[in-house]
Length: 230
Image 1 (tube, helix red, strand yellow):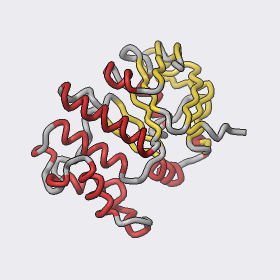
Image 2 (cartoon, helix red, strand yellow; image 1 turned 30 degrees about the horizontal axis):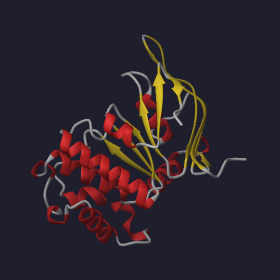
Image 3 (cartoon, one colour; image 1 turned 90 degrees about the vertical axis):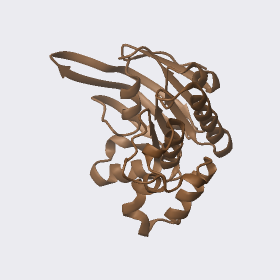
Image 4 (spheres, one colour; image 1 turned 30 degrees about the vertical axis):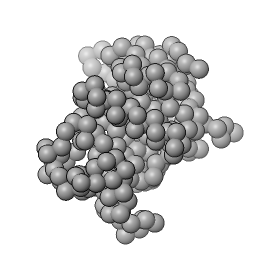
């Protein structure tokens, strides 16, 4: 029986690649993350941090082991069922923002759900506008990414991650492409989302400011979980 307190539970995850030789990106990682936790994941480059995030987020499948997200064993899902689960439960934030340069801020925010808007239980455009307003971007709805600062682009990306009312947000170096001031603003936004909305955050980061605000810091080295914090 799964522990209802956990939104993420991994068991003995491995992920291997063959690139001339066998590369073990994850090596027996077992990790539990409670609902509402803010977890920072740290470790040297190549330690498996981003791979772990991608496996938890169902963007990649483990070579072996088990991943349970919000009570669902995601290894049992395939195709459209897996995509539907990811779209309904998880939000993603990336270091390089991944905004479409020819779309406005509002269009970028609603883009992930645009094909499904007729079946949504909420007004997609209204949700997008409200999210951007909450990020102090209400006057930037129709600006293209190239007309926004790095910090503003990342706030658009955070709004996009929130568009589906996710229970879990996975962020990969969300301040890595920002100056110090913008990075601090993003850290504060993430902490606020966690405190006020109870959204679980799993953040891969080298940023000491994020680690200092997290509830727990876990460390990976050579694909192994060497410290679960606490």
